Amino acid sequence: DDDDDTTTTTKHHILHNDPTNSHLISNDPSTIKRHFRTRLTSTKQTSLLGGGHARIAKQHARGSLTARERIDLLFDDQSFRELDALVTHRCQDFGMQEDESTIIPGDGVVVGHGLIHGRRVERIDLL
Image 1 (cartoon, one colour):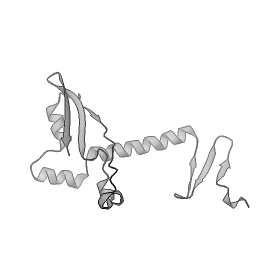
Image 2 (cartoon, rainbow, N blue to C red):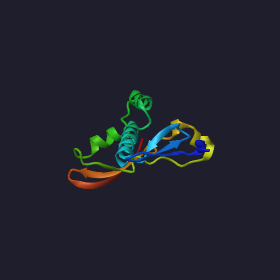
Image 3 (cartoon, rainbow, N blue to C red):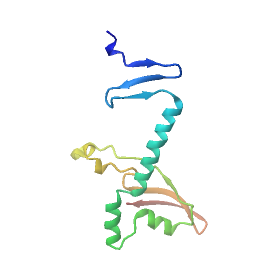
């Protein structure tokens, strides 16, 4: 019975049936790269929000700047290079792996290096 066959071959690439998402995923390199770039762009945007608009508004309401706003003011223009901005926690305690709101790219910390008055400086800042 061919109902269990999850692979379809076409002239240009192979398609696999993904039972978890119930759609076809292409092995074509350009398609894989496009999906990866889309995911990467989305994750970077989420990382830059540092927990979301509501948390940023709450900080501003207290009269505080966000970590990235403080860094922008401290470092020479366009010199700060952030490291590990897309890292997320791997904590399995307290049900954290199930709560999407606790999974923030950058894991609540901004780490990087840049120039202050032309001198190289390392910086770690909490969001």
